[in-house]
Image (cartoon, rainbow, N blue to C red; front, side, top):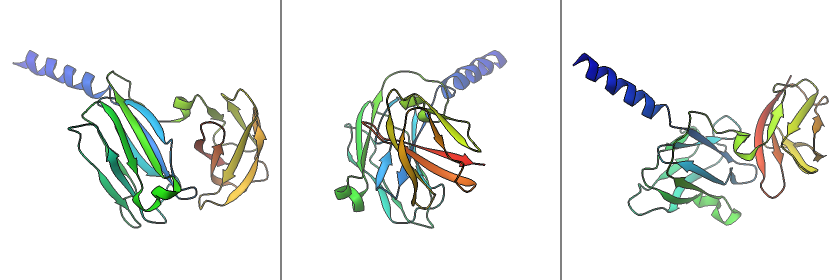
Amino acid sequence: MKNILIILCIILSTFTSKAQIHIVYVWDGYFQFTPAVITIQLGDTVQWLPLSGGAPSMVHTITSTNIPLGAATFDQIWQAPADTFFQYVPQVLGLYEYECTPHVLSGMIGSFNVIDGTTDVNNYSSEETNLIIYPNPSPNILNIDGLYSETEYKIYNLIGSLIISGKTNKAIDISDLIGGNYIIEMLGEKPRVMKFIKE
């Protein structure tokens, strides 16, 4: 009996350790989900978080519009001071499309494609877009790896005000920023949004 329990524990721990959490940020500033399109594996979790890190500043929804047959629908309303995150674990393979009902005309739509496979535990980060910013926190220079050509960038504070913009393919001088948390958006074919801290 003891051996059966040990084997069951090993099987369960192996199964649960394969799940991955993919973060999708809800951005008030541009009325968008970022990243808007991701591919995940069956058993993974999609988690929506406010990009600012605080409560949503306006009403949004995460509403399924077109999902595989047999999948559970979802319709999460975001409004301060309501919950500031939502998780969904798809149980069916296929493409899941969703929208923010109040802002669908502004293009606030997203999707995730669920494929069969296994993964290691890891929060979604810019690894999916092969973009790395460092050091983070940074006192003066924010280095960027993964850009192959000059790319336009925009830096916002946490309330969505544009602070700096320009073009780069290697580094950004942030020495004039006041210490605190910021959001950088790298534009191009596939916009990428990340947080960083200015020391």
